[in-house]
Length: 426
Image (cartoon, rainbow, N blue to C red; front, side, top):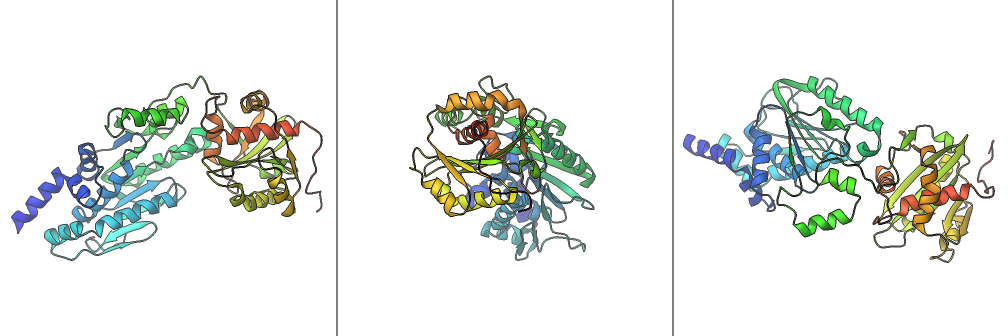
């Protein structure tokens, strides 16, 4: 029996990917085998950077399952950007542990029937040792408290994302969280980081021993697939997410956005909807108020959503922020949206658009960009996807709904006074 256990452990050390492929992860390659081995058996702090869609997070879920059965006494803390992101990995880890393959591994090594328990934020098994009652894998979002927590292994995955690209405050917040992890790790433990860079000043600047795998080196994307992805986004975003480097986007009109945190600055402003009626376009919504030359803006984007599915939420936002008239283009819908907004009891004005989008955005948004500030606060967090669509805009951009909406509302604000939905004291 001892020989059987030793043979199994030797096999798992050499070929963990083979088990993963057997339970359904058939897109994993020998490269992923090395990643999983390093995650499970490696020593010292490590940072793995790899392009989008390279199965980094999949490898983490598989590694967690192996850690649970091979090192049941170890405590692991797993950090991702949000709690929902954590839950996704916890579910995948539990599902892997519950396969016949892992039950067989546990029976061979320990002679027990493997029992798995998991919730929204943790995974554990009946193999764990010790009396503390702590789960083997504990997942936390970047908004959770790290106070008092300790672990033998700390994993971070995609704690740097699209929001870090547009928000200096977010970049600094994540850096502070990463620095706090040094106090979480037990003596002799390790921190393993995975992710994709988004900005030259993001938290990857603090992470040690970086090993990078770009889209050309992994063999996971064909040249045709790479070209398709390249044509769908700005050069700077492609370079960061797929080539793992930072370049200046000479075609980009907009950079270095500014922010404010008081929603009251938008009071008595106006709104604009760039409506989607199907297909790949999104419904974009902008609010602005101009005070002393500063353009205070709130933006939202519902990619791929019909305007009817967003309208109640938009009206609710307007009422909460005390926003007046909502403007919308009526070229394509013959005034449908304008009427729909009025039927919900909110003032609306439809207009006929006769200006080329590129000219409108170049003229009305670019000329005032230095004066624009975007709302980002707890009650109304920044929609990073919306802002990134503006930052990525150029004449050949695949999507332009958000910059078009913001340019349109800035143009409308310069015209005659608008109807307002609220008065002081109402």
